[in-house]
Amino acid sequence: MSIRPALVLCACVLGLGVLTAQTPAPGGVNPTPASKASKLPEQMARAFPGAQSFSPKQGDPPHFVAYGTDAAGKQTPIGYVYWTTELEPLERGYDGPIKMLVGMDMKGVLTGLVVAEHHEPYGNISVETPGFVSQFRGKSIRDSFRVGADVDAISRATITVTSAARAIKNASRRMARQYLPAPEK
Image (cartoon, rainbow, N blue to C red; front, side):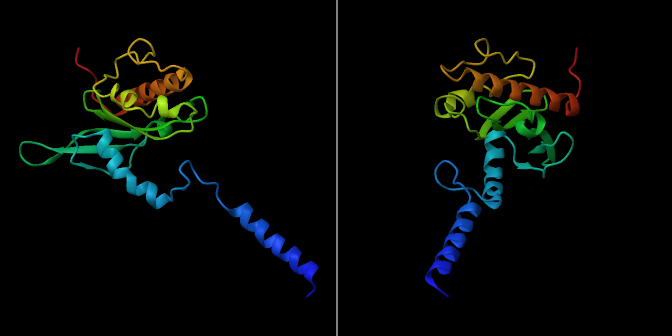
């Protein structure tokens, strides 16, 4: 084999390797499906801190049931955990979907929120801050979820925060309509 065909072969092999390589995620590492799944129990515990265990994903809309223990020691459902992107897939922030895991108790009160993934340019000063996440803990699904009224606005991240608040509100209300008992009058 002469040098020219060998160089062409090397270039093709190297080019194929570049084409099939994944672009690293922020931080330089692309999580594998297994590593994403291994984060889920910890994320669910942050979204619903009072739960002792969770069901596998189920239902339509898709969700996890959060369980606690009653006075008799029996496991009973105490709420739900769900992904906003599975319930509101068309809701987008400034630069795409904001994947959030939300916990909600049986009275329609949010127990926690985890921002799992986003591509927002102002993420580190908007949806990633502890203040953004904590403002939803204890919020009722009957609240307005309006930025500037009952959701804190963040400078330069209005589109992101408005979209995130709307996704949380709409996903939570959809879950409540489907799975919670009607409120007493």
